[in-house]
Length: 459
Figure 1 (cartoon, rainbow, N blue to C red):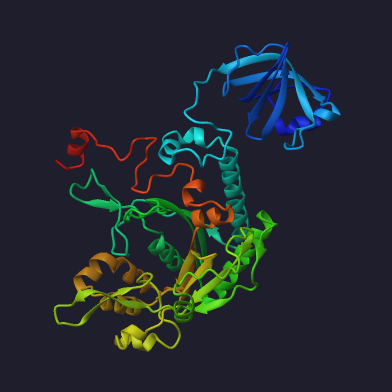
Figure 2 (cartoon, rainbow, N blue to C red):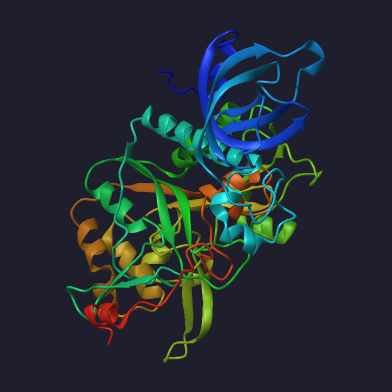
């Protein structure tokens, strides 16, 4: 009995009888003969049949037959297997297929996006999307190998955690066993990765799911993926140098045709970026239409705080952080932070990496001493009780001998979308949601039963 082989492996099987399986991608009838294109995860192969009356597009079939060379004038140079074909001897129909709601042999951009998302499992069959996810796999595999070779440990952190004020709104999950209390889904693994530094791992990373309940925007997703990392006993230069090397080597490996506008990546202060480009995400390309040109830069020297809306009860200005509350002040600004003096002038040890006008990553050196973190929380207006309730666990952990540490997080979806020349991140997320957070395929969010609500203490 023949075992199935992948279509790509038929290249080495000329003159032999093999078994392949996949979907019918196209059908052409020529008198007594019919030709179909059979598609599997590895490629396309033309199959010659004597009868094909029962076969329709997208039917799932298995075929046994002989692999032959095509006549010279019939070679298809557009596909890898264009020089061979199969002469079918036996066909087994494994599953019949209904007519699809849209064509699958196009790039899909002409199809209404809501229809595409409703039938995403069909949309994903497109060559363009198949390539996107195979490339995504290559990128994440390269990243894992790169970091593993440099003594990083990949560690998963929890998805059910505590709601703390970190900028965006949390998605919350009611607890059945603790009625009236809620978990939060993490906006990022920020606190956990710092706690791992306290735990002594020194070099951590993960490909992490993050959740933010943000206002509707076309290119945001309620859940997205970060390349998250943290390192102990490092300063800003070490973090930036390692990540610049990671980015360069990843692109050279996966995208050898891409061109870097400038190496090493230029560094621009936040002040210079705003004055010269009017944005802290400058696009340094001279020709914005050159899709293979990559203009990276680092933006540094961000202000730590910015004025928030309104005033405090005593009439003083309200402050909020520009990135996150866990950053350290840049060298030379620590004393100002501790004295809560010249708040608007304090520079943070923060750094963003920008590609073609998009921020693809950001990080900072952290406050590794509890008294410094506490000062930040006081500046943004948290009272002693609020600090203890929301961040007491962090302050306590840092007090047990936390090493100096810092890290970065890359928006993996955005990074890949730019490299793939895709217009938005939904094209590189397998099952994305609409701009307003709906999953049209699963019809989520949806109501739950009264019994479920009672179990959760919500009725």
